[in-house]
Amino acid sequence: MPAPKTLLIACGALAREVLALIRANGWTHLEVTAIPAELHNRPQLIPAAVRDKIRAARDDYAQIKVLYGDCGTGGRLDAVLAEEGVERIEGPHCYQIYAGREAFAALAEAELGTFYLTDYLVRQFDSLVIRGLGLDRHPELRDVYFQHYTRLMYLAQTRDAALEAKAREAAGRLGLDYAYRFTGYGELASFLARAS
Image 1 (tube, rainbow, N blue to C red):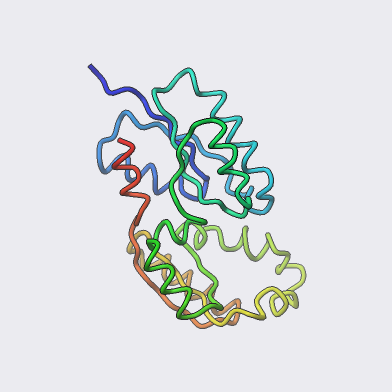
Image 2: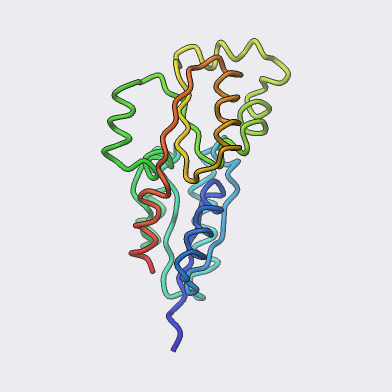
């Protein structure tokens, strides 16, 4: 008898990695639906989007899990999940999810002025950072947006020389020192293993 299906409601910025973990582990009973990562620019919309996905799918799955950090919702996402009785992965954002709670705390403590990128953010750097912040039209805003940053740290989920080169280039474009740390899938992998 097949295992009951579990729906994973994921931030679009995590979807590629979630699908990679599902394939690598043969977790055929896990299904994914994603919410556009662009909502990070309007985090007040995230809780309602997640609630809509939960309510649309509740009758079709044995369980539902949410793969989102708080992502700037100020606790509103957790309030929705408490009302709906759905668990989410712990953490304020994907940087901590990938690096791990203790490791991320140490990174942040070591250099408060760090701008973080993940594999997803490296791939989407031009659309989310350059065009998303209007730096393509107003490059002078770089010094306003990043005045308190000193380095860019690429938290890599995969070992990919092309992505590392893009991350290094992104640091140069922002005028920041470059740092790299391979995290793999971090707590995302362990959360999915428990969910499976």
